[in-house]
Image 1: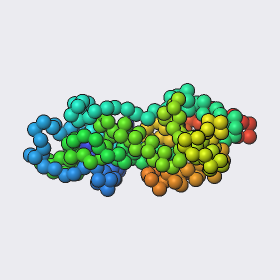
Image 2 (image 1 turned 90 degrees about the vertical axis):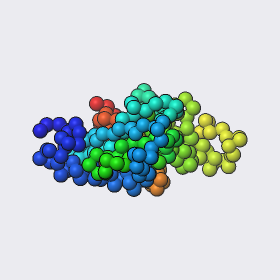
Image 3 (image 1 turned 180 degrees about the vertical axis):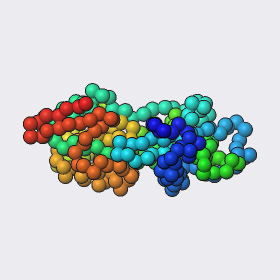
Image 4 (image 1 turned 90 degrees about the horizontal axis):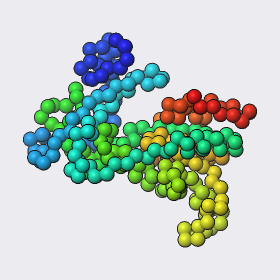
Amino acid sequence: MEGEPINYTEAMKRPDWKLWRNAAEKEVKILIKAGTWKLTKKAVVPRNHRILKGKWVFKIKRDGSYKARWVVKGFEQIKGLDYQQVFAAVVRADTFRTLLAIATLLDWDISNVDIDSAFLYGEIDSEVYIELPEGFTDLDSCGMLLKSIYGLKQSPRIWAQTLYKILRELGLTQLQSEHSVFTDIRKRYQQRTGKTDEDFLGYFAGPELIIAVYVDDLLIIGKTREVVKEFKLHLGKRVSMKESGDDEARDYLGIEISRDRERGTLRLS
């Protein structure tokens, strides 16, 4: 069979079914460890709440590893009942291209990280019930969500609020002109001058670290490699991250980054 399976039944019929099963088991363990839901009998779910259906999404990643994700069918949600607002942290394409150009011109370090199971870090803001992962539960039970999960309409907004709070606590400042970009401009300036928030004049000082956010993918631009490593170290204490193993970013949002630091060039493809 070619491509990825479209559902759990098909995945279990394939010659490589054990790999898909292992990937699904890994996902379930992550969900349970994160405390994503409270096990609930379907019979006690309030009448005014529906149990949102879910599905397995299977994918073979670039490195050949098998990935399975349990996703809620958010299109079944009702505004005002299952969710209130929607929003996603998405840096504009022209912004991250400009940041890459600046980094290339100044010969700054460029790196990136992918937050592992990002949506599971946010607390759910509505009473929501979901089907539990197919193949791993009994038919009489469902889950009352305690954490956001992939597929929910409000999950990107909850995750954005969670990540923004973490970045601020790490001393970064959110740009007013581009809310998905953060810099260390305030922290560095205040450390040098002893200025308080009230008399902050940080826009006259240059940053040493810039972070661009696209949902759970972070583009990290630092004046030195040590600045980048320091940020990753502190962020890694708050969330689980997936890194390429290379200090230099090789791709971002599926766009390949080819850089020649000696010539001062960078190409996107």
